[in-house]
Length: 421
Image 1 (cartoon, rainbow, N blue to C red):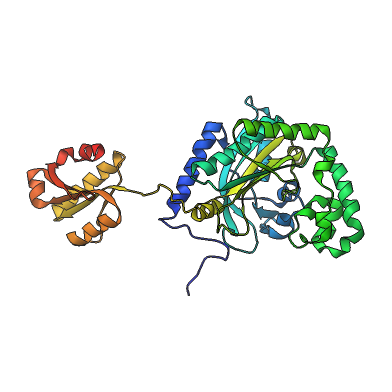
Image 2: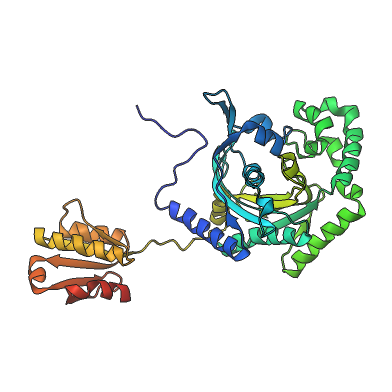
């Protein structure tokens, strides 16, 4: 019986995985330039972490988590996102006591959500994200946003749109929450069961409902912008000011609501405006989460971050027909004729690899013509051909596949020759 992979997952095969490696390397390079350090947290955590950290009114916690009991009857959950685990680690390891503040971290790894698979959306997906914890200066908001934009730009994307909103501070959100409850409560029975539950707990999430998005009360709902106090307005204006200094274009969207409960002040999304990308245009989302660290048992410490899907980034590259520079050229393919020549090519291939060259040789006992075809398929720069006569003479024939030229050189000088050509 053939066993296939579970629905909503994917195998990333050679020929494609090189694109992932390229993007991950670019992300690491940018994080080094911005001084964000990598953190690696467990793939599964205690379920309570996500219930408290993500929010029990979110779709993630209510519908999408992979939760199970271990043999000790503890409830564990495969991580659905990266922020909660990163903040848990920040608190547990007392990073708030480190000399260098704010603490700037990045992560890259698989996340798990039980949702309907579709183009660019999987049940196991890879998420890259950053978190900056310890600063309430709006300049760090702009820095985090600029890092995300820089990653997309550096891999070649052009059709991008950055959208901003302010969710305000605690006082602003409380005032807006009361207005939302008063607005929706008289007709809440016309909304889905999820919205009815959210009304008292987090009515802001009603505005993010996909089922009831066309209800007439949505269009007339109180705008959060009308409830921002002066401090929140000033903060948001500073964020916009710093982005403008960086030359980063953006649009304001008072209806932008992030899907997680822990956000406040700055919220943002980066979208693809490329034709043919699909109905779901969001590539990246993030925002500020002052208060989350305290909710998870830490001290009062502000934070901001974002997360993006590598799968959706690749889809955006396809939509813009952008090819990444991942040719995977082979430096030398070794061909031998005769047992003694084969022994020598084994030795030469090993030495080439030790010297940082990529090398390959035939292990299927194919004839020379088939080996040459193999070298061509692997896009080898050189083919080194060694027979018994060349071995006795201390020489080896090197053929340049691109030009078709070839020359005979001293076998002892082969490695240096390959490194210089």
